[in-house]
Amino acid sequence: MRHVGLVISDTLVSQELIRNHVVEFVINEQNEYSHLLASVAEAAFRFEANGTLDLAFVKNQRRRAELPLLFGDVIEWSEADMKNNRVILKFRRMPELFEHRVYDQKFQVLVSGVVSPIDKFHFWSEYFPHVRLGMKSSEEVLPNVGVAAWLNLCTDEDGRFCVEFDSFERVEHEARIIAAAPWNRNNPKYTTLALPSHEDGLESQILLPDSLTERPQWQQEVFNLEGICTGKRLIFCRQLSSYEIVVALIKNAKESIPFGIGVSCEFSAVWNEYEKRFIVTKYKTKGLPSRLGSNGLLRTSVKAVENYPGLFKSDQFGLIDDPRGVLALLHLSAYKRSSVVVTLEDKPVYQSDMRFRIVDVQPDKAPKLEKWMEESEITIEDSEGVVVDAATVYSKDHGNIFFDVPEDLRSNLSPGKLVKFSAQYQHNIKRCIISKIVLLPEDEVPSVEKILSHDQEECQRVFLIEAMRPKYFRSCLESSVFGLVALGSHISLPRNKSSKFTVWVTRSVPETEAVRSARTPFMVLSIGDLEPPDYLLSPPVDVTSLIVPESPQEEPATVPEKPKKRDKNEIQAAMERLGLIGDKEPTIIHSAECTDTSCATDCPTMSAVMMLTEEVEDLWEMLSTKNPTFFTECVNKLFT
Image 1 (cartoon, rainbow, N blue to C red):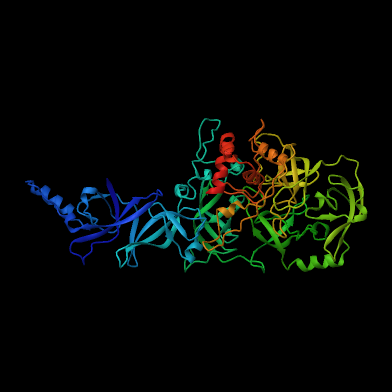
Image 2 (image 1 turned 90 degrees about the vertical axis):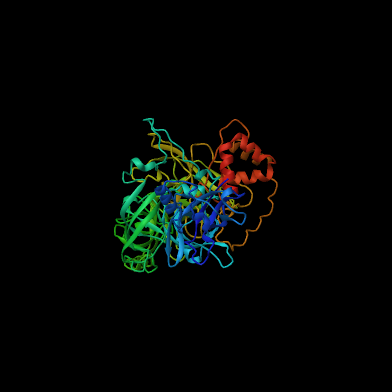
């Protein structure tokens, strides 16, 4: 049996029989490296001539044998070369495993590793799988990103081997270490990337972004680009405006400007196909923070995009949406063609044109707008729209405004009806109230009610419409009824030349108290005229909570009550959608917030799985047989 070890000391001058301490790497039952301490005997450095008469050869071999071992050297020995008390009598020198140094009187090695997304204080590397981080170090680095770190190696007073974290050195370009981490090993997201065949017969190991042909600036690795910090770790770069660029390791040198919102920087980054974003490998802050708003956020001047109320554009940051409706009435004011200074938050969405969102209006225009709103009679005359529920009308000509219908005007209205209306803004309640409304003779928009998530107690209306690919907004479709409708990350348009699609859309209901996540008031739910299924399923299951708790001290989640027995038709419908019964192809639909590693609480597909887990005894056996690919995805999302 061969043994391999790392020398963790220079020559021990205080000992007569022992020259060096060595730590042996041993594979344990968990298929991880553990460590056994050994010593190299003084006798291991002696050369015996064994009768050889070639004096030059003997002299050379003796010189080589007597060369001392130094910290960082790697040696190999056999079982016969070692005494029972783990003293090595004979060894062979091997190539080095680690870059090493003696720093501040500490013996250190540089290793590639990953911080756990489950425990932010756990740093994993191949040879040292269980290293603990301090609070400050854990805040410096993102989880699931390959980084190089210096570790201190020593023996304590009792002769035990000790490994301590010292500092992070850099972000690694190689992603193999991420896939090798124990929490990622069985996750299909981190297995070998698919090899898509191209027309020329060649294959590429990198799944390039869909927009590569439209965005020639995209490269797998970029160097020395200019950017500006827009969030805690975010960088915005005009050449790569549609892509999230994340600083994985923040190292603020004493002589440099601290990394923070508004600070300009120069950076290099590498594309991470697993996470669909650029990971910054090196950055240098260059300038003091640009002028920020009173709330500490980025400050910029925006103008309304003509013919698209509710959508704005900044010369510096591109297209910007207004989910809070801060400027919802701007197109009705005398300032509709003027620039307005606002503050922004950066919320990048993969390949979306609109990553920045308006937070508030800054003092230059705010007093004027407030005065106009208070003193003016704001009216809308003869506008066309669609009834979206029993008491609400929406018009694409007014962006983020939803119009309230008084009870006495609702008698002939139903969702999907096209109407012409007049309305007035009520200052006291900050709402637009319809004063006159008539039905239009055009056909109404088909609609049905659906339960789209666990959290909904009431049905939500979904509409069937025709939509086109707009010329300038690649992350949206455009409808004659709803205007721009956002494409969720779970929606993939067919790769053909068709510009017209039949889609189901629904209102972008806020996920928090005040802000919707979608970039437009309505979003695409599914493609095709097939009615989307209901998702009235068992209690909310936060799959991500099974994977990524905030800290080791976090209290365990409470166990939800067992759901009530489901209707047989509901169970059958869910099984048909997953391809477990019937002849139809499976309908696997994820919510906009789902990722490759976890599903959102409102994910319809994962909700169906969780319900069937309670209702169908042999669900997992059926799923592994009928749909093995989806079975693997479920297992990794739920149990890794």
